[in-house]
Image (spheres, helix red, strand yellow):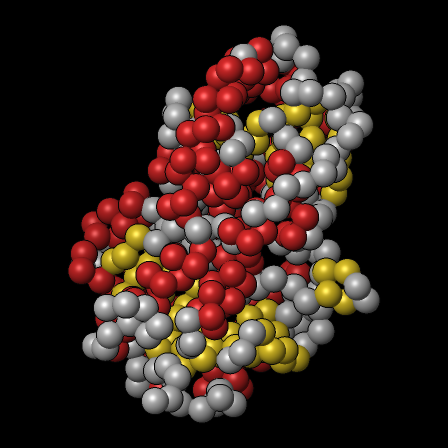
Length: 395
């Protein structure tokens, strides 16, 4: 019996190494990790995949991943013109080298070109469409800038129309599922399947990768982007009454600003970009993880914190409360409230017993977010839209 062939469209994917180093201008974030981890797990389930994505700062071309997955990196190596990857992608989307397509799966972030590509692909291949919403521009995106307002107005309409026509919509949180049902997407077509973590990456013990940092260690791990508001974390640590070290791991457009603000604090460790494979060791070296975002669909680093048994302090926005249960796996604070963030950090810094209790709660919840099981649920969605039993999954 031939393998089910899935055409997966995503504006970002983990970058390939160039001269031994990953592309740096677009640091790896949650969506890059999600799309790559899902590809590996679906390959293990026996599905064939053609993944079409942008090239980031790497080379244009095709690479193999696993036994039956091909990753086609397209477009121009220019950050400001990223959306042009979709024009170059048409040659692969309309005529995949692997042959007939059984399912089109689009991963939607803030780049709406993915949805337009998906609509063309479905017309060309006459097959079902599955869309995973990594960031709903209609319901999750926040901000007052011109780009954000245009994206919410124009992109929101594109998103709503595309999701209403999709055969299945995968969302990361129940909050987004409810919002899409309110937009007219039939409830039977919506499945909540969160981002997860790779159990193999978190299975082994790790040496302390921050030996020079005093404890307790309060850390941020991720993209240094405006919506993440790492500047507020720096301000909150500056207001703390309890002694603590601040660790900032990541890169992005806010790097210079965040590093300049943090330079005035006495106990600061700024590591810059690290490969995703190094993240488990970084998390294991922390005592508290902080995610002070203005908006967030879910925050995949939160599931990795659960796997690391790491208490979290995070903004009470978007889908974060579905992962971080206040008082059980972490503490939630109002977005933008630096005083409340500082108070929560002081509370954890002063109370090792509370940190230990929250860490135990995190470990207990981690099993819900292991990637192999989540990928099996995605494969079951493919089978459902095709009217068949799940491939590689018990019916």
